[in-house]
Length: 517
Image 1 (tube, rainbow, N blue to C red):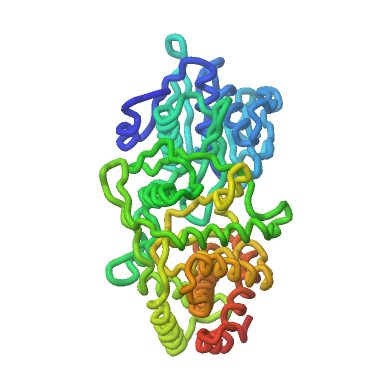
Image 2: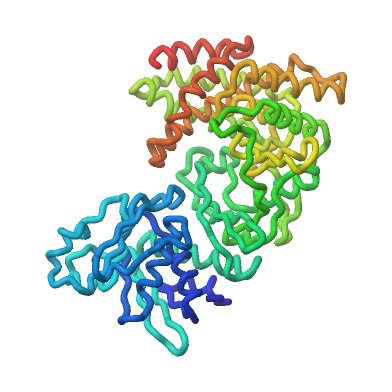
């Protein structure tokens, strides 16, 4: 399977041919194919008797159900076998069929194979016996015996997403072979609100995390010739993660070690910091862990930090500034998505103009704020609890590629108004108070009242953006799960608006948005 020219070949081939020397490589290839599949796909497996079709299908199914020892009998006699996919696979149902014994394509409807809904993955051996009664497959896996092994040819007449995903999966395997070792187990771990995805990869002794983040094409131009990602200073490739990770490591923070990288392809192999977080099994905040998380920020903000770092390819990564342009394009998500969703109609231009005037004035206030390296997503999903360490090094940080140089209060607000966990007003106040106390211990000149003002503005700015993002994720990206967080964020914004410096925004919000909610 190790093909040195694979990266180059993938860019020009309309199909793949891979030599599998034994059953172990066939099983591993099946697992890699599984990582490229999703519900609604149709996969044909072709080859003579004994070519390895069922072996390959068995590996695909075991990967998707999340059990390498799962019993997967041949469907030769039952014709169709049904399996329930694991939650991480994202495929509720898998149908494995063998059409070798059917006498007529008319039987497909009775077998439940005539139409594929969006939740099913269908694997079909001997598809030629369907006599064209099935739709075009997303993938065709053709096996032929050769020498002491077999050749797997993978093709797609639809130029489908499955084929593109499979190219990526094979590329990841090549990266892991080179960056760590061969024969690693791969398991889908999770995805996030972005296009990034993650895998857990392991050998018999150790587990690491694979970040799969191919560079994405810029979105539509919004203003000044720039798409949203550039205006908001969001990372467009993995160089940002590597650069910020270097800065955090040099500051002595607990960020994951980087073991291997391919900046061009957007692949990183990272230390697995574990799965223990700062919330309990009922998703309630563990107060002492939140307090220590605030303390970590306070100590980090007390020290000087570098704003740039050299990457392995010789380039310099400079952390961008969280400027007016970025803050405004983010809060405007409320105008574009959340407000129309709540009101049922677009806002009036006068309402938009008043909103932008308010936020320009608030950003003017922030011009006097102390700046720091803002991790930007410093909240429960991205904070790992490391009990084996001491002090603030018990706080492990991940998912920091969108870091910017901006108001120090931003990450405190991100923690104390955790968008995915209910943080009581009492705990929020305790976190801010503890942060301030640590800062004042180091410098008696630290202005607590000014910080509270900046905190209120940044908390309001962040939750304003998030309200828009959650609606956008649902309406544009088909990710409704984020809507469950709306009530919490609606409460957070009302909390923040109680600060006197936000009086104008409070009046606007209550009159334009909240009166219809």
